[in-house]
Length: 300
Image (cartoon, rainbow, N blue to C red; front, side):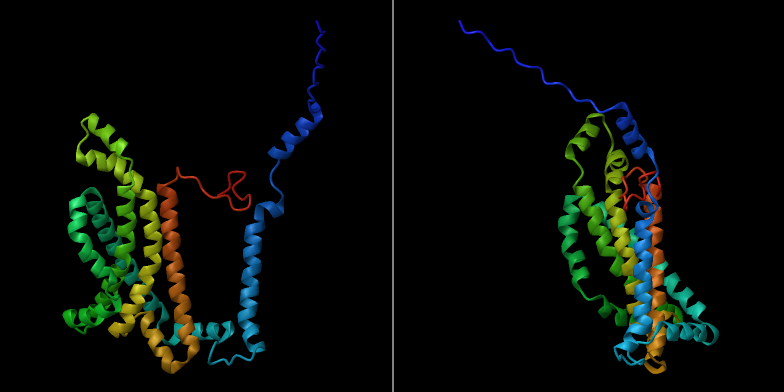
């Protein structure tokens, strides 16, 4: 009988205690300055390059000033519009229209989205009409609204608000509808086994599950509201608001047009950031993206 050769035990290599302690200290140490702030540093670099390219790059390429004005010319136009053209009042009017149009469009979109999501019958009956309303060009409604409401300043402001409502309504409704339909049926059936009412199922299950999609729709709607208001002001011929400044720029030069565009962009950014702020307060339990280690030590 052949003798079995004993198998040599493979020694287990354990790292020295000093190496393990060094690795633990490295992981616990705060990130380096570059790792912690590389995203804002790169953002600042891109901003500087963008400003420099706009201020001097177009002139170096021979682009005429009446085609694309420099930032310094737009700044001078800002001072002139602030002092002589009541820029603050025009901005306040447009901001109010954006806020009201966004709020009304969001409420209508949320309401219709939840109704269609909870009632398949209502979706089948109403979806063709809602789809037709979305396909119809929103600009075409503005002259019709002017005929309905009249030619006063308040009526033309209502035109801009209604166009914004139409633009904001559809994306929010679609997001909410899809989120409600995506709720796990097993959770709903489980709630029904505990004799939960239809309202309790909506409030405890469907509504919380739809919140991420709702805020995604609100993000889109906050930017579309600015577009809708601008279109309404341009088509309605209102003599207030930033749309009026855009029309005035046809005779007063490109700097005024660029100034109005920049102010409209700022309004859209503020509205978008307000939605993000509300989203983070409401959906504080959702994980956030780590931008280059900025959140590694609990930073936000």
